[in-house]
Length: 163
Image (cartoon, rainbow, N blue to C red):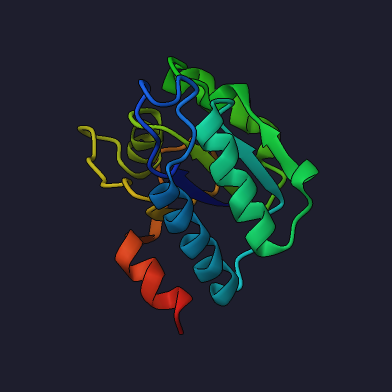
């Protein structure tokens, strides 16, 4: 299975919007990332999102950019704020039958998930800010032998989107 991890786009400050919706800059970055995903020919069996506003908005932009119906975006408790890596992995087991899964959420959980899947040692630090997209290949969620396919940062996604 391939897991694609993306942190939600940049948010408005909590003082401006208590729900912390995406800022115009965040929306622009996510739109660009979605265009890059389309150019790359990515597709997903599941589009799972942290239930918070910015993550849901990010996943909906990605879904729309790739031609999925809005109803294909699934709020996923395993990505919620405060969830442990153990709980996240247990919840993700329902996806083991899929080939390609998009996960949108927040740090530190996404970083912890990537680190857990890619290493058996100390925590791996990965920069997932600004709409970066990380691809990890895994044979089993219970093993710690995932392989890093690629990590594309915002500027790289912009270059791909403009090609």
